[in-house]
Image (cartoon, rainbow, N blue to C red; front, side, top):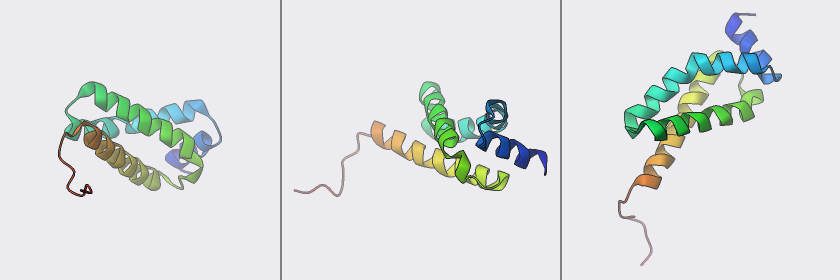
Length: 97
């Protein structure tokens, strides 16, 4: 079993050290993706924490290292959209009158 798959498997079984390895390996990608759109370090750090908390809660569903990267990008994107939406003072175009 390659190292990344072994680390993922251990993390899914509750190995905190393996989960910390996963966070270290992917935190720069999550942070840079979020910061590129949010331009706010504090908000980006909070979002990254939420993404990795969601990952910890969903580890059993992650099937491979490639799936992990896809999952992290998808969840980071959704979290960014929610953060931007919460900060936006734009009018809603579909409001009922």
